[in-house]
Image (cartoon, rainbow, N blue to C red; front, side):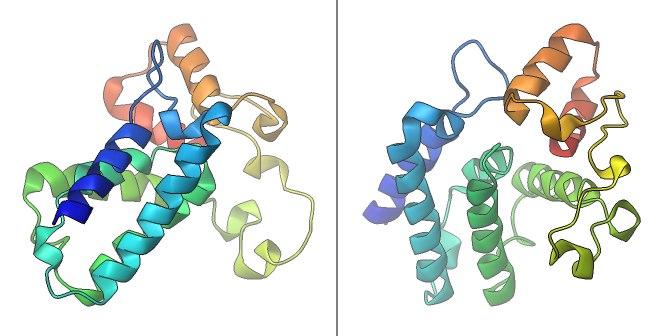
Length: 181
């Protein structure tokens, strides 16, 4: 339990938003590479721990995992998804969460799944395995029309910060927009 408490502190630190921003997480900052490396190790070790443990019910950092799904770093998102996968295949932990924890998690997962693109946008399984040029529809943000989004040098968090300042985006639509970015 002491180890999980220390891990919870690391997840909490990594998932904090950077001062004066709403979208950039501390673990996404370029100068915080050691923290990101530690975070990835914690997530991967926790996945192993959960996989071979019968005390999954002691895990209490699910809110941090939900927050970290908003990372601009796909390594972090993948590590969180891997840990959630371990929970889902080894227990009914996620389904037994209280609705105050389960609902935001499932909403965030749904937003991530919706933004994947699908076969119609050139993201079919075979196309993802080839080094092909992206279709125009796959690099254009349609919620607010921004073409060649993939060519913008800013991070997704920085782009989102700019968009929320330029446009009045309803709070309940912001995460969906962010996952599309």
